[in-house]
Length: 249
Image (cartoon, rainbow, N blue to C red; front, side, top):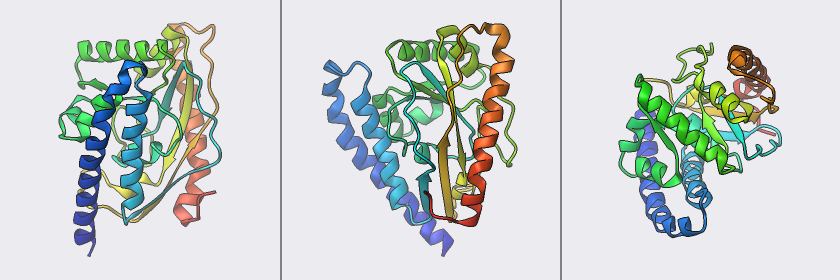
């Protein structure tokens, strides 16, 4: 039964992606006056929200009443599974995401990411990483928050992987705040290296911005630790709700 429902869920997700792209693509005309690509970006996030709502395995929600980030903000989150973008898309604001370049090659999904203004990066390539950070900086200069998973990849366990420097160097160099957020429950939603979905109640919550005012690159490690501690605390606050299957507030 799980296999059959998983096949249905993938077909539903694919149909939503194709339909969503067809609705999003004509919105490129808004780029004439929407230099931050807010409209095409929000259209793509709503594609993810729709796919999550229709998935028979998932019940996703936002915990608390998060305050939208300021225009110059680097948002960082733990990364449990490929379901994370779906649940984070529930948050009611636009931000540009840093993602693997391979994702941009997926038909319809990757095309929608490009239309949204998301930022590709090729793992292990220094020049690609620097180009991606430069693009993130340009978005911040336009007053658009950027979203980065500082672990760089999905963790296979409940332990957070070491944080990479990129998001925190970017924040310090651009004078941006760092906004930690946390997800819990998505690992069960779509386990790493598995095509089968699993029943999951997952939540996302948002923390308190960390100012980088007065910081230099010598403070990168301290900033990483401040963000990590907050993400761990936020995730711990979610776990009783996601593990017990409680209805999101």
